[in-house]
Image (tube, rainbow, N blue to C red; front, side):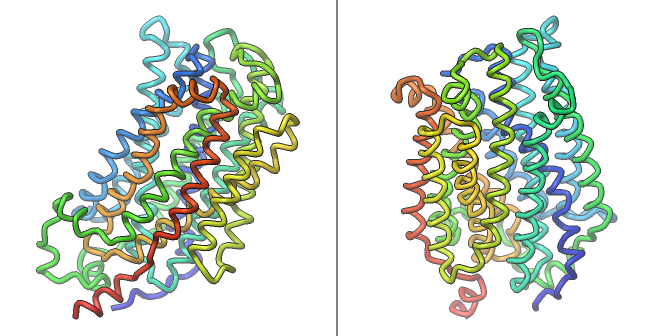
Length: 441
């Protein structure tokens, strides 16, 4: 039985909270390396700080998917309870993390910061995943492309705000420098404001969206009593996962490894290549940190523009692969850019890859899976986001030595990874769950 069409307002409401969650994610992406460098981390060890967060994501996401598939709380729903828990933990951590330097009397700032980073990444992912699940739950196949486009737009709009906050607050006169080992007020205020926006947006979605009750969900997803009792054993589900789960996952591996290196090394890379400093205590390095946010905002703008062009391609795989190639060119071009404004070109191109990474994988995978295990499959698919980051983070220090200890060279390596991902796109063969059900019957 086909799900009914939803109004544009309802599609918007389902994903509106994503705007606030993405602000938090953008603040983390643009400022974590800056925060740890300010706390005294060795640049060669920066990537190691990113191992625990995705590791926690790999554990937590399947559990959230499995649990939410079986959850129903009257008056709240199936996915929203986990959204609320993730959002409230994120808010608490966003207020604590930028104050890591102030807790040195009680706990080592680096250890405290690492614990907060782990909790922040886990809680952001916990809050982010329900939005993808609710689109899969509530939106029919005809409107799913539009729903994910709205989600992508809100994602990039939130990124734009989060990336620019430290730059804007500095422009307004908030201090962008601080004593050694202390995070500047411009960064602290950005996290506080981001936390406030996050809770407002999440509460808006939770109060305006009514999830399907279990009976309605079963009816629209064709779940019989026998299917409801079927095993949700993780290993069995992985064995029977659609081919797209694995082929898209291979592309994801190279994409997310590349973007981890972007988040990890952009601040140090442009400080080295444009401001000619590697001293985190210097005003030039902190200026590079602010400019990193501006560049990530430019990337978000490029992503929004390119997302409008993606539906014009007749071949989804061509659009996917071309996007990654443009992103690769953007990463590699950073090596040749010594003017901060010329870097806009590089990050606009990187935005093309980011638009495809946000839109293509979930559209392909959710079209290929059935409804009874939607949550756990999306939780497992999150492993194709987390595992590449774990491996890339674990190898980051060694790879940095191999490329001469240069953070700019790590960004070039990110471009090479995207090129490999672009080639892997052509290994994907799309199918739809309706086609599979027809063949089986």
